[in-house]
Image 1 (cartoon, rainbow, N blue to C red):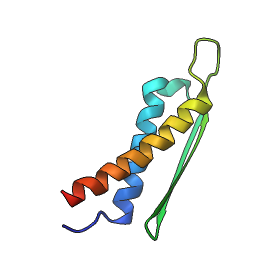
Image 2: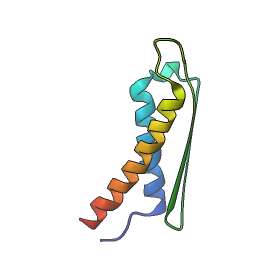
Image 3: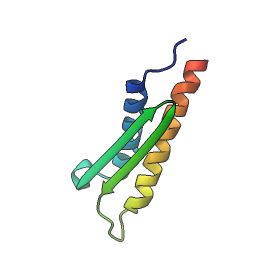
Length: 85
């Protein structure tokens, strides 16, 4: 089976990252979200910028952004693992 193309890798990572963010915040509460994904020569880079409420009862936006980036990595790892199966 062929490996996933670069576009599929980038889309999978971005969707996973956004999914984590919106699992923690309502979309209307997120003031700005920028998920930048690059996949070149087999190297995945994910950067998540999140501007969201950080009140006492809200999750820490920095922690959510870190979790989103890890989820993107994991989703791509799963994508390649599924390809090998």
